Each structure stands twice: as C-alpha cells, then as structure tokens.
Image (cartoon, rainbow, N blue to C red):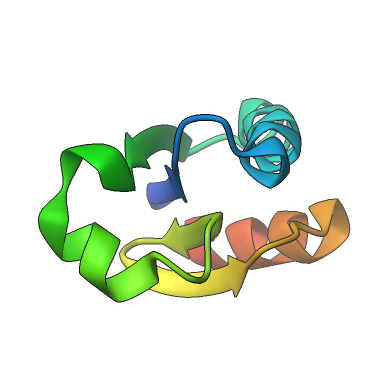
Length: 85
C-alpha cells in the first residue's frame, strides 16, 4: 500500500514565482499516486507569514520544507516517490 504525501505550496498573492511553482507542483502531484496538493497563502496565516515572508514560495512535503523560491520538477518528483513508497 502506498503512503500519502501532502505537498503544500506556501504562496502569496501577486507572486510570479508562486505562479510558476504552482504550475510545476500541480503537474508533478497530478502524476504521482498518493500525492495531494494543498496551497495556502501567507496573507491568510500570520504564523506562515512570520516564518516564510522572505522565502516565498515554499514547498512543504508532509509539513517539512522541501525547497524555497524555485521548484525543480525532477527533484520534487523524486522526493514524492520516496514519500509515497
């Protein structure tokens, strides 16, 4: 049985890097059985704002930071394969 991996994109409105990250993350998650995509905005969460305001976008896998600023599809794909097996 495969495990579930939750991929969270921490973003903010008007962020062009967030738009690019969203495209990559949603595509990789869509091709990965057991992966779930969630997006949250620092504009809606004071704790996330305080933690990540200078590092947006941030990709979390099961709550742990995977990367900041730019998303590499192959690296994310590998991390999700590890997380869901």
